[in-house]
Amino acid sequence: MTQHLTVVDHPLVQHKLTLMRDKATPTAQFRQLLGEITQLLAYEATRDLPLENRSIETPLETIDSPVLAGKKLALISILRAGNGMLEPLLSLTPSARVGFVGLYRDEETLLPVQYYFKAPENLAEREVVVVDPMLATGNSSAAAIDLLKQAGAKNLRFLCLLAAPEGVARMKEAHPDVAITTASLDAKLNEQGYIVPGLGDAGDRMFGTK
Ligand code: URA
Image 1 (cartoon, rainbow, N blue to C red):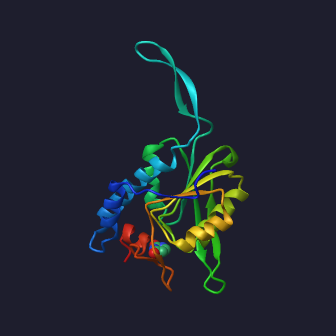
Image 2 (tube, rainbow, N blue to C red):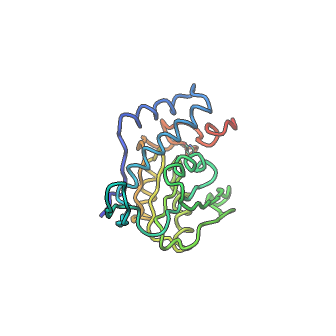
Image 3 (spheres, protein in one colour):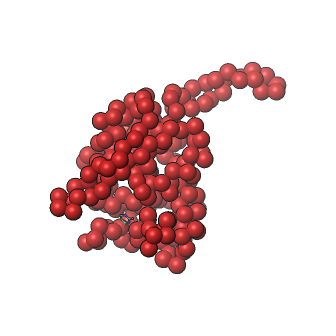
């Protein structure tokens, strides 16, 4: 069985993550670093993608050579911070299909409420890669994956920059079949639901909204 949580401890990832955590790092560099780490995480998170052979002609001979099998990947961004991971992933897998899940937290019930959902067709036949930089409480990630499963998704994996132990536990309870790849398992969540030591609000830092 696939490991539920993979922390990518590659030196390049860890170096870039330190730069992202530094509050002095400006918006443009933060976004650039997020893109670079996303591609390195994706390299790990996709190493078990199924392959099939295709017959091609090199300039010298005909060979059977591996290509990704099945329908094109589906990349799903959890709005809004997931969008910072989307373009870097698309540049690795340019023909992937793309979907978006928008959720906000109801201030009374504290439960995630859907405000937007658009996913590619034939989700059941696709490998689905869900992206959100911060796996904090895990409530919105678990809810997004619920919606994707209701829409037919069967093979899902989750990519995040940072994870809190609470979020990992929530995902393991709700979706033990969804492997998580991250650059760091941080210490905890604080009372405001921020990951500590974390890097602050990922959306604000990548879009410069604060
Ligand atoms: N979302 C963020 O952007 N940062 C956190 O620390 C937690 C959730």
